[in-house]
Length: 161
Length: 350
Image (cartoon, rainbow over all chains, first blue to last red; front, top):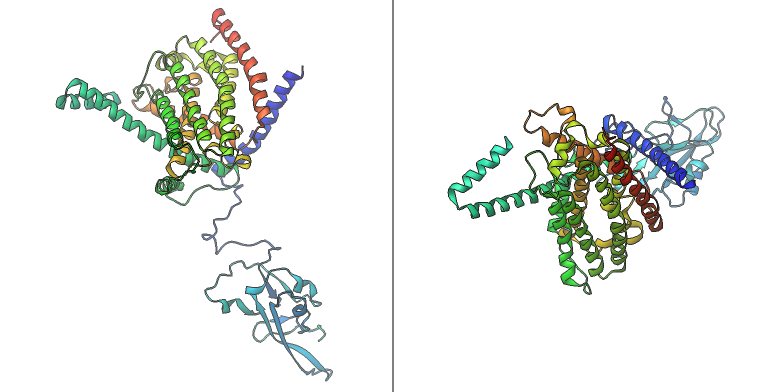
């Protein structure tokens, strides 16, 4: 008797499959709700990347234009292909009078970066983080070399130099 | 109204030439018109397929060229026309070149029997359905020749599989048609449609008609070599199957013929089960072009079912394909014919 139960089972499973795909089709036909593709060049202004997207390396700045980088250059030694260059300098701290390291320039070569994220893992201060910017196209390669610390930014208080 | 146009053209031609010449000219005009229908149908159905596939796969499908991407397939066809026709050195060049024409010629011949509306049917003979099934069997020769003449192992395997598949499933298609012919009592397509004025055959023949419809849809999918019965092309195993070696317009012939064959099978289903160009309950009988409208709507509905199958089911293995036909469809079909005959004999049809 498995002959007839096979037919019935087969039909049932086929109809289950058709119900699922049919739901996708008719919802997409009228509302485009399940459509997951992006109409890329059209929505370039409104397109938002998800939180874990690895767009580029950025240096975190708070609202007072303060960053957490003390120029220890651990990120530079962690980078496998030399995408980062950090220039620091030393000046006496006004409170303790000791020489303290501070960041002058944090240079990021986007054209060499493979988005491996090792610099972010290496940073003891969690100063670096992922940015969600995806539109990196430039006509000139030199424009891909970026200075990460914003002009006039200072070290956040509470970070040891 | 359409008839008036036709008679106007007929009278106009008669003014300028003799009766025989008029007849020949009309035949040529109709042939040209059907070639146009063939091309437009093929292109439209390819567009529809890609668009529907997009929605099934959570995409949008072609939507850039023209409104709703309608001109995408025209652009593709232009590309194919402009491409070089290549072939292999060791191919049997004569057979290789002739093979696509078998496929499109049979598709065109079948198209002539399709009743687009009450007035628009090029060729209405008393053995219409018989003619249709016998003509569409010739198409397999084109595919078989292509597989053989390409001198390519993948093409050959594809061609052999076509032979197995088409010969097997032609039985089921034929017997599903026979079931409905038992109910109709005629093979002439226009008469079959006239008989459905009181109710479509799927309602008149209820249980056996529904079974016949399901068998026809399964076997029809196999006949048009579509997924889940696309062992002939089986991209993951055979490259492109029988048309691996074809390029440019020769490839396009196969491609268009496949879609036109799908249209033909959908039209037969509409004629046999859903009353052809008849409107539901005769609501638009008075309007002249309504037949064309209803026929198109119904055919697109059936074609959508084919597409639904295609984007849902995975491909069969060759042994599963044959098991389905010889162990399931054929015995059920035979019992179904007897059931239908009994119902007609006892007057149990609605």
